[in-house]
Image (cartoon, rainbow, N blue to C red):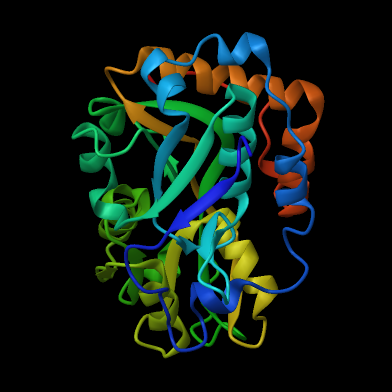
Length: 301
């Protein structure tokens, strides 16, 4: 069936001792998102933009790091689920294509796109000029960085300067690791306070676990992830409501050579917005407040 999702797990499902993605397959959030995606029909104006080699193949090879709930994670059966798998399926169906979602290490995904091992990636990538030097990015949602701490906020962290002298965790290769933590360092330095101890770990599950066990006082991650875990596990985590940094768009990643595919993604997302499917999927994952009115190609440039 056109648009069917095949999830190819090249590694075992990640676990973080109770805080991991496999735990995140909680019952209610996301209900209806997959159904909305499956109901999408091909849009001839969109499929006309799809590169001929992809039309001939009939399937797009996608890649994500499924440790970033509720955007991309694994359920208790090992399936890759979340906002982006639903949105990726819906966009592909607009194009008249199937998809296969492969599991990869976030820090190596851009290299995989550059090497043409995959056609595209939906992996909660914030759109930055640095990334656009390497790949083309097609926006589909608003993002931003928030901070999460242990339940009851034992370190009384209320603002960025409260992080000075403490250990703050983030995932390798993310905007948080590359720019947000160094930004925290700079603010602490200007204020004459102790440096932040940066704890950069390979998977988001590892980052969550560092906070849950007290190895880190706080973690920096996408606001959607912070909101998700603070609601899903309020007995473990709490969001710091007053810290929001690096507001940015997030987008689909394609090779810079694939202008036609980037155009097709933009058209597909705009078509999903126009027919209401986009809103249905965003709201299924309680992310309606991150919606955009239209997609753009390389908007940060």
